[in-house]
Amino acid sequence: MRRPLVAGNWKMNKTTGDAVALTSGLITELAGFTGADALLCPPFTALAAVGETLRSQGSAIALGAQDLFIQDSGAFTGMVAPGMLTDLGCTYVIVGHSERRGRFGTIEDWMTPEVLALFGDSDATVNAKAKKALAAGMTPIICFGETIGERKAGQTDTVCEAQVRAALAGIDNATIGQLVLAYEPVWAIGTGETCDAPEANRVCGLARSVVASVAGQAAADGIRIQYGGSVKPDNAAELLGQEHIDGALVGGASLKVDSFAAIVRAAR
Image 1 (cartoon, rainbow, N blue to C red):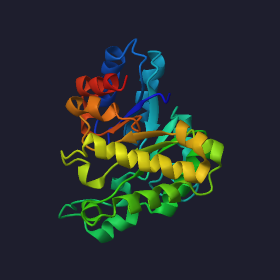
Image 2: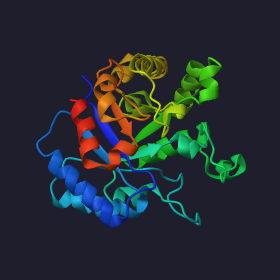
Image 3: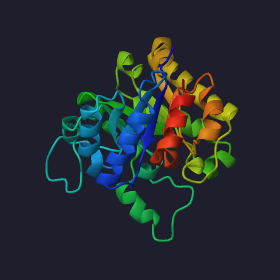
Image 4: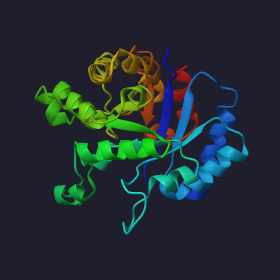
C-alpha cells in the first residue's frame, strides 16, 4: 500500500519567528503519530529555521521547498538552486504549482497576464525542474490541473493527461514510481471551492493510468498522487479515503496547527 503524504504549502506566509512557532506546535501535536508522512514547505526565508527546529527536536516531519531553479549556480538574480535547498535539509520540492505556472482562475487587478508570464512555469520548465530536483536527491511534487474554463469546456482529462505526460518525459521508469504527483484543479485553489471526492479520485486515477502507459504498472502502483485545492479538516477524510488519492497538498489550512494536524491524521 502507498503511504499517504500530507504536505503543507505555506506559500508567501510566516516570518521566521512565526514559522518556528508553527513548526514547534506541529511537532508537539503530531508526536507519536505514524499513520502518514507529513511535510512542511515554508517560504525560502524560513527554510533554515524550520529545518533546524525539526532536526533539534528529532521530528519525523520532512522539509520541502516551494520551487527551485533549473541551474546549479550562476548569474540568476532571485533564484534558488537545488543544492541550496538540499544544504538546508530539503528532501522534497514543489514543482509546477498553478501559481507558478500562471494558470489562475481569477487574476487580481494588479497582476496582468504579461506579468504572470514572466515567472509562469511551462510544461517544459516543470519537466526540467523535476529532473533537477531528482539529480539533487529531492523528490519533486509535480502539480497538474485544469482551469475553470477548461473544465467547463470538457477538457479536464485532455489537459491533465498532457501535463502529466510532459512532466514525466525523459525520467526513467523506476524513478517515476518514486515521484509524487499533485492534482490541483486551478479553480479550487484558494477559492474555497473543492473538487468533490469521487471526481478528484477519478482524475487522480486518470493520472495513474497515464503513469502506467508511460512507465508501466509497477510505477503506477508506486507513485503517490495527492489532491490539492481547499482541503480542510471537514473534507479531508472523504478525499483521503479515495482509492487513488494518496495524500494532500494543503494551502491555507496548513497555516494553523490544529487544522493541519487534523488533515494529517485523516490520512491515516
